[in-house]
Amino acid sequence: MEKSLKAWLATRRLPVPLIHDLDRLLNLLEADGEEVAAFRPLFALTAFGVEWRYSAFPEYEALDRDQVLAACRALLLHVQNLAR
Image (cartoon, rainbow, N blue to C red; front, side):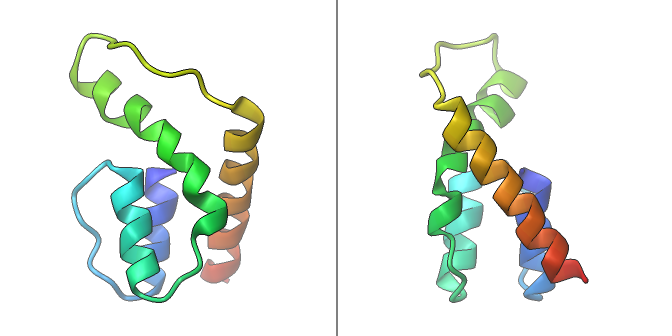
């Protein structure tokens, strides 16, 4: 999802920061006028991309898998459409 958000930033010709925080990436898109509300559930995945990558499996909150999967699919479709 991180790469999809970064691809979306690139389609807007915005700088692509070297961060893994999905909420910060969404905030950058929102600040540029993009509608990101449907993708906010992706914020829950930040722990998997950041904390698990850089530490020894800390405690994490349970995901609403259906909501997160729907947001993932929607984001991928949105970015694919932007790239066309």
